Image 1 (cartoon, helix red, strand yellow):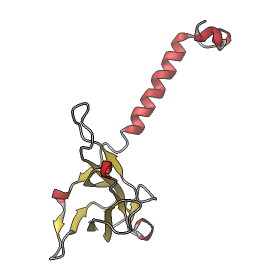
Image 2 (spheres, helix red, strand yellow):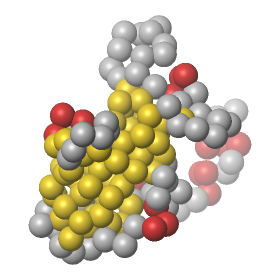
Image 3 (spheres, one colour):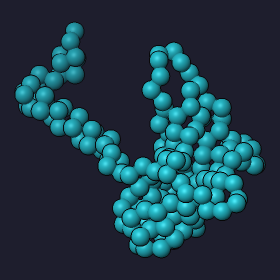
Length: 157
């Protein structure tokens, strides 16, 4: 018994052309949504400018009103993940994620290689001109203290 017979699809007013076109439209919509952050400027740790003598205290200049991403190296297979420590207190920057979590991007590796580190992206949009500090903390969810902290003073110009 074929699916068409089993679910009585023969009785539906659908021809194969409209089904194919609908499927293509849905796939294109999914691709458009997936590409939503494609044109976003991504700033890596190499782009961060040191601010002072304190370790992991940086400055980053961005354009006001333009969405951007802060990218940090990450390896969630160890249990450690970065999280935004102060998402609710931000006034100038609007984080894409309200829960303080980033988007993990795994590395391109050979098949069968597990545990390789990737990166996490944190997306923000500055509401206007000004400065605001973002703090990222690298820790396991079940532990109280991060093993790394990055403070980033973001200047929107």
